[in-house]
Image (cartoon, rainbow, N blue to C red; front, side):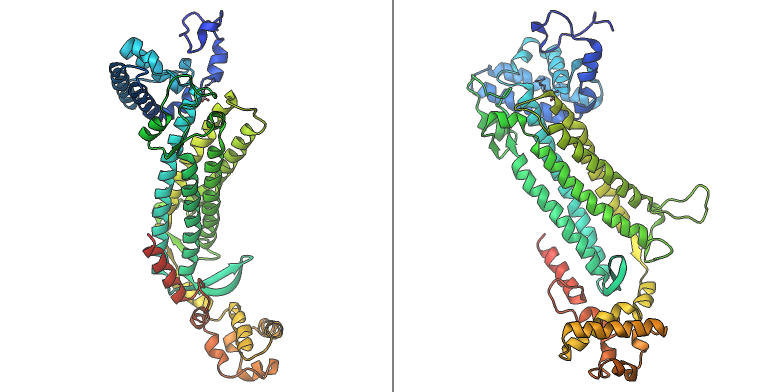
Length: 462
Ligand code: ARG
C-alpha cells in the first residue's frame, strides 16, 4: 500500500519510515471507540480547565481549547466530521480536528496526559453512564413486575421444581421472585458504580507527571468521587470492565431463564400465558403459528454477553503491567454488552407488560391436582405424626390416587382412613388450592398475604 499521503501520527517523529498502511488500519480503533467521543471531550474539557487553573496553560488557551472541543463535539454529533481510520483512534480524531480549528493551542491540551489515562478516564465515564442507564431499566422492569404481582396476587398457579408441578402458589409470588432477582442485579451495579467512579486522570502513561497537575480538581470536574491511589493501577485496571460485563451476564442469565418460562408457558401444551400479537411473530409456512420470538432472542443474546465475558477475561489474562495495546480490545465486548443488555431489558419488559395469565385454565388445573399432596403430609404433621412417616403415608395415597384414576379431593374419608386413622373431615379443607396457598405461615412464602406484604415492602422502599 502507498504511504505517500499519510497524516503524521501522534508518535511519528521518532520513526524514519511511515507506519505501514495495513498495520495502521489493523491497529486503528476509530470504528469502535468513536462511540466514546462525548466522554473523550468531557474528559479533555476537565483536563484543560484544570491545566489553566494550575497555571500550566493560560486561561486564554484553555478557553480556545474548550470552545474548540465543543465545536468538534457538535461536528461529530451532526455527522459533519466523520472519523477516519487513518487517525488511529477517537482521541486522535478529536485532537487533529481541534488543531485544525484552533491551531497551536490544541497542542497544549495533552500536557501531562497520555492516551493511557485518557482512555481509562473515558472508559470510566462510559461505565458510569451505562451503569445508570441499566439501573434505570431495571427499575422499570421491577415496577412492571410489581404491577403484575399485584394483578395476579390472588391467582393460583403451580410452582415447579424439576419442571414438575410441585405446589400451588400465588402467581404474584412468581413475579415477585423476578423482582428480587433484578433487585440484586441493581445492587451489583450500584456496588460497581462506587469502584468505577474514581478518576484515573493524571496517571499519564503509568508513572504520573512532572507537571503540577491537580488530579483532585479534574476528578471533581468530572463528577468522580475520588482519585486513583496508584498510577500503574489507574492505567492498567480493566477489572471494572470485567465486573460490568459479569454483572450484565447475570442480568442476561435472569432474562434468559425468564424467557424460558415465557416460551414454555405460551405453548399449547402449557397454555398458561398469552402474549399480545404486538410482541409475537408468525411463521412463513405454518399459518397457525404464534411464536415468542422476543423471548427466544433475549435467551439467544445471552450467549453473546457470556462470550464477551470470556473475551475480556482472556484479553487480560497474563498481561504484564502496565498498559498494553491488547487492552484496546476491551471496547468491542464492553460496548456490545452494554447495548445488548439495555436493549434486552427494555424489550423484554415491554413484552411482559403485554402478556396475561390464562386464569381460567390455571384455576381448573390447580383445583384437584396431585400437587396438593404436600398439604396431606403437613396435615398429618399437625396431627403429631412425624414428618418422615407422614411423607411415606402420603406417598402411598398418591400412588393409590394414580392407580385408581382419582384426584386427592375425590378420595373418600373411609379410603383416607385406611392409610392413617389420623384423618378426619378436616382434610378436605386443606385440599383446596387457596387453602393450601394461604396456610403457608412463613415469611416470604407463596400465600396471598405474603405476596401483598412483599409488594408493599417493595413499593415503600422505592
Ligand atoms: N487506542 C488506544 C486504546 O484504546 C489508546 C491508548 C494508546 N496508548 C498507547 N500506548 N499506544 O487503548
